Image (cartoon, rainbow, N blue to C red):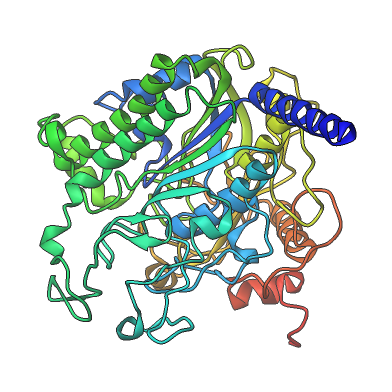
Length: 518
């Protein structure tokens, strides 16, 4: 009996010690804007024309990376990279996004950012836009990708709760059916599942699309994020909160007091509301005394979309694509150069900036560094720990040997120091010239730019520096073959990375799939 009591006391002490150790770990919040290039933050763009005070405050109180990049020019690929520390083109997603009713993109066996936090004793929460696929339950059992076979009354797994989040509230994509909130693995309510000629029809009773208030989405998320932070005030367990905002992506739907707040356009209003949502989280941290023990990351999934209506904004002296060529979906800088700010009071010097070239995959290794835990060799293959820079250290060499960019249509670009090689004739995305038009103009198949002297990518130097082209092509081939861009054993990609145009493969055969004989 005495032995049993002694063991119980020891267990209680151990649990208390573990809780105390966990309490010393900082909370971590990752906020991901949607379709916001670096010029959408007023702290970084003198030509902004409107203010983003909450995001500016993060920049004033933390470190800003001025050469930071999303892993892709579009949405789903970057979300995959952020949560896995791995480039999306190593997965099955070689171009585009995860489509409607599609299965999960993240493999069950792959370690994710929230799983890493949960292994270290953290509470994990996601509020916002998922857009990485689900296991849609089929009537009668199993799963399906056919809309008329889906049973929307059953749990829909394969999403956030299946990949490390204790709690989830959000949506897949706000303007995609089914139009309903999700809490954990269930839809709230029972919405119909099809969209036809602008209205919802189909397999179960529920609201029409008109009943799904797009303008309420961001307001709801901002409120819930703040409530979650406030609810953690008395908890000993540290938390990880992931807030992928749905804004200022389409549908451009500012809500409440933000409708018309700028007098410029609904997009400008929505951008201001996005900044408000960031501010709500910061306010909750301040009011609960948790700010000093919380690391906040703010970044975005890709460059600004042309849906912003640049012409209209320019007329109002709001210039969101004046500093970089291109926009969302492009291999040009405007497609993937994004804001990236990290605030950690007492650990990161306020108001500092770094010119290191980084990528959003780096969040995973950086969080592992914050937790003082090691990542295994078969995880986060393209993730580098930013802590040495964040702590003010002087780097003897760049954090990354290379950073690889990917356009919405799957075209590659590779960055090494000041040099950038694009494996496409045009933008590789949506801005002119698109690939078909560039081909008609007989533009070169490759583009090489010196970003140090030509940040707007206006002078193609591929004919002048063939050795640099050859060097960067070899670096890209190495990244393909090694299955990683960080030191470690070779890893397997899920199929060969594409798109590499055939004329480029003929010139650089090392970029070709070794399983395919020429």
